[in-house]
Length: 154
Image (cartoon, helix red, strand yellow):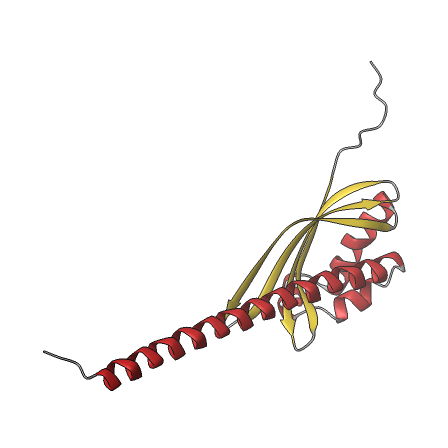
């Protein structure tokens, strides 16, 4: 069976077009996912800003309904108040890892782990965000206080 030269050229052009389209789609998705991480990191900064000003209700109000199903306003505020009273104001947060998940049903979710230096100690923080439009909406938060590395009595 022989294939005419023009048919082979058309087939090669189609294959190249399909490959280029797939490459561009993956590139755009990658940029979108990277942008989602940046939005989540901005969400952490805004969270810490509100936390430092003790605006716990504002954090709760800006959170997703799934967080509000897990926490009452009073319990969430008490949790944040306890962290604030124990550690003080949040300072520098060092990235300890992230994961971006995209699905048709949940949209884009970003999990960020940070090691955050507070005034009186360090905590491992875990944030779960849903990216909606151009902002991060808090789905979940947890802080694990690290033991103090201060002087020890022998």
